[in-house]
Image (tube, rainbow, N blue to C red; front, side, top):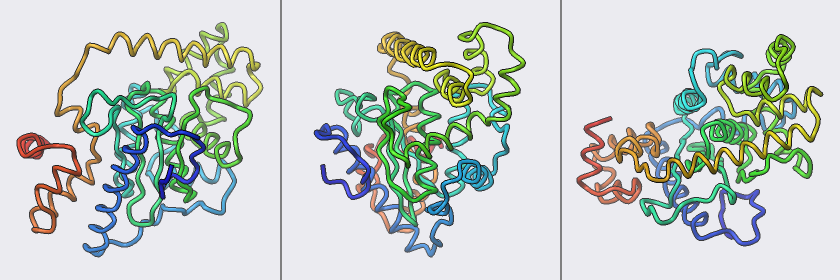
Length: 308
C-alpha cells in the first residue's frame, strides 16, 4: 500500500476501502493546506509540538492546555458521544481537521471495517487531519480521537487498528499514545480516588466508572490494570464483553439509516466546510470541486450550506 500519510501502517493487504478512504482524505488535506497557505495562515503550533517528549503527563497537560480543557473536562458532558463532540470542537479551534464516516465516500455498500482500522492521523504543519471510522462504538471513537490527537501532537502519522485492545506486542509510540489518550480521558489520580470510593463488585465498578468518566468500559479496565487494580483475565473479559456488545448494537441499528444531513454534519469537519464556502464565494473553488470533496451534488450541498 502506497500512502504518503499513513506511514505506520502494518497491514500486509489493505482493503480497497481503506486505500480509497486514505486517498480521499489526502485530497481534502491537500485542499485545506493550499487554502490556508493562499489565505496567509501561519503553520499550526500544535503540529509536532510534543515530538521530542516521551512523558505521558507532560504531553497530556500540553494537549489539555492547547484544547483549552481542564483535567475533569468530562464532567461538563453527559455521554461519550457528547465527550467526542467536545474534543472534536476544540480540535477544530486548533485547526485540526476531523473527518468521520463509516463508508467509502457516499457508497453505502462499501462499509468500513473496524477490524481493519478504527482511525488514522495524517500529520501536516498546515492541515493535520484525523479520520474516525464511524462504524465503531461511541466510547471507542472517543478513545480513537484522542489517540490520534496525540499522534498529531508528536508529529507522527498513524493508522490505529487495535481492535483487541492489546497491552503487549505494541510498539513504543503506540504505548505512549495509548497512555496519553487514557490519561486525558481518565486521569490517574481521579481514577484511583473514585475506584477506592467504590465498594461494589469489580465489573459493576468498571461499568459505574465508565459512566462517570463518559467513556467505554475498556478504557476503565485499561486504567485499572495499569494501576494494578485488576488482573489480565478480568481485563480480557471486559474487552470480550465490549466486542460482543458492539456487534449486538450494530445489529440493532442496522435498519436505522438516519437523517442524511445530520450524517453529513457528523461526517464533515466544520472548519473545512466553512473554508470551502468562503473559497467558493471568493471564486477560488468551483462548485464542482466542492461537490467532489464533500461527496455531494448541487442539491444536497446547497441545502446543507443553508442548514449549517
